[in-house]
Length: 132
Image (cartoon, rainbow, N blue to C red):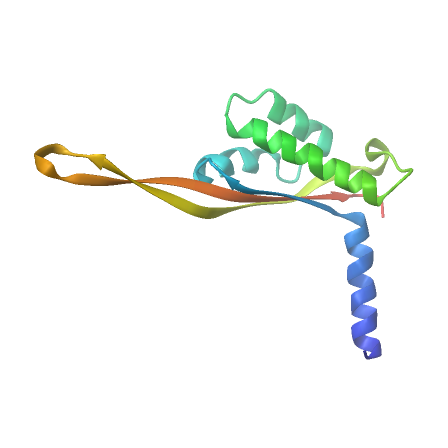
């Protein structure tokens, strides 16, 4: 491996040491409903994001709260001996992508049928620290 690639890989590794990723795959909520909740916590610090999710009435907020706690635990595993409150953790990125669709049939009048699409999503949450 050349020097340029080695330096780039070392820089990427250093950035990944500061971040923690948590993923939620095949969540049975439509991506549109999940994005409504995800947009409220994007860019916020971890403590305020947890408070927003805890007191939100949306069903998707419970799943995102659990995912955020998992991302914080992943960050703590990477950075042993450092407290999340002191390092200034914040939600740097939340991606909600559509997943597989379950297709069902709903009977309709006059012998017809309508297709029902039950949507699901994948959520990727990245937590980063301000103090580097």
